[in-house]
Length: 141
Image (cartoon, one colour):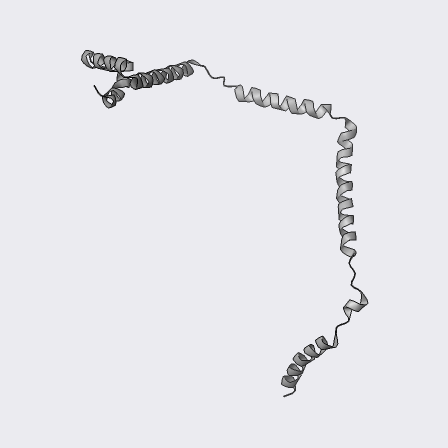
């Protein structure tokens, strides 16, 4: 018997549904081939674990129990925080937000252009003047 045929027949061998001749061939092959014997051992182990899992009766209220414990843990954690901290936390957040807005306004007003920067050089004025003249010429006609 070759390994391919043995691998095909392992499930039937484990279930006991092989003929006597085929069963003896699979047994002799498993004794001679360590790879097929290891494969049979692993598959048998997996089937036994699956069968054990089928015997476990699930708890229908498991999720409700877990959610209750989570709720109790959160409630306990909330109770351990002092009332003063519970009151001061929103005040601190509001104050820090107001301070951040105030600082942003101050930083935005730091840069003020000087009077010198507001005046344009004469060359820029002449460049703009050329564009205005062409519009004036067209509007007079």
